[in-house]
Length: 612
Image (cartoon, rainbow, N blue to C red; front, side, top):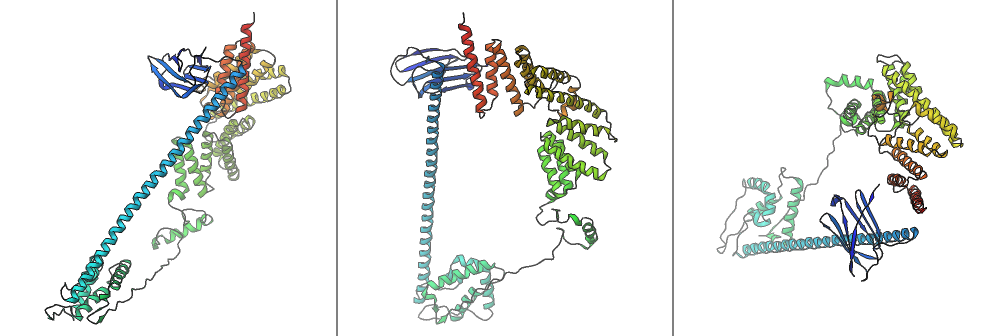
């Protein structure tokens, strides 16, 4: 239970200053909550709650640390002097005033968060727009550069041909002058081959015509033959792109349409052909070999019923890790030995998907379900294995193991009668393994089953209002099994019903001690055996589980009410507040009931103090 903190305060017309000694508490563990009329400071183990007399501006207030003190400077909403710092009123008024302040502060914080979220989204949009503008400018720059380069290339090409015709410029003597360096690089290899073939019959001729050199018809033919001759070593896509570029440049220039009366004739590109190859269908993924034909035929004969379900032979199977059940079971065993029970369950399930008859994988998966706290699934797997054992009638060791596991799972569900039946059948099975430990467990299970039967009878009597007879049966149950938490809890109800608050407090304290133990070392007699701890017979709920929290909440609340009846108000409030901390925040009804009990006990304490 938290201790109420102390503080000192001073004020001016505009501010209120509180000084809170931290008493060794670390600053990182200090939590300050400030609404306009409510202040809460939590610094373990102290808690300070103040309902302020007037409203303050929580957005302008601040917290400082000075010489081991937490200094809070609260800004007043109006310039005035306060008579006191705390608001005084009846309980309902204070509670309503505090809830209104908290609700208002929550709404303000929600609005601030929404504005921050909207601002973040708007900043993201602005950054995106800026990035798009940059990319657009970059694309525009690249387009302009390409356009300029294109104009320069065209101008150079036109100037070259104009000079060639007028006799004052350079002559076109190779493919580079005609189509440019880029396309010539693609067709370089084929051009050399075409030039080599042309040299066998044609040569350049130089004729003097007015002092100007000119390309002959044969040389023009050589140029165009080198362009249109595409060697097979060049990829087809590059051939087509190169030819298209050449035709485009030639079509753009009217000067190239006819040179010395020679009309160009460019061959059409070759048509593409798609070839498909079909292979003989094969069951196995490995290449066919004559040396393995007999082995494959023998495998098909032995496993014909499982060929359709075997993923290793299915076309959708990936590798051995997805298809071989023995490999998957081995991986599951490795996960189990390492304590990774969830991965082991996945591995065993995959193995069973490949081969449903793999009983060992089903048996091991049942063991994993016990460790994962899934007793219903464990019982289902054990029952399937036992059906297989009944059909085979030759595996007593496996049958005994499955009976023990199903019995342990029944205990986890609270079915002690079913557990006792499985253990009795398993003990009577003769096998190679010793039955000493199993017989010891059978004694424990029988003891618990008898105690559970007594508890069921006592529960029925208690529901009928016969508390005294139920108390007798609960005493016998707890004498047989002292750590039976449910029996202790119900006996506490009996003590409270008949007005024996001291014994009720004793039973509740025993339950709280058992639940708070980190291990089961406090159990008595045979109940402290290793195998009892290993299987767990569900007498004490697992720590921090939902059932554990429920039992602890009931014990604390009942002990608090019993203490209040004995006028131990401080201890009662401590127990009820601790029970309130254990209740889930989503369980509004239980929290409201506990808060009402706390308010009622506080009122009882005040009335008790004011009595003469």
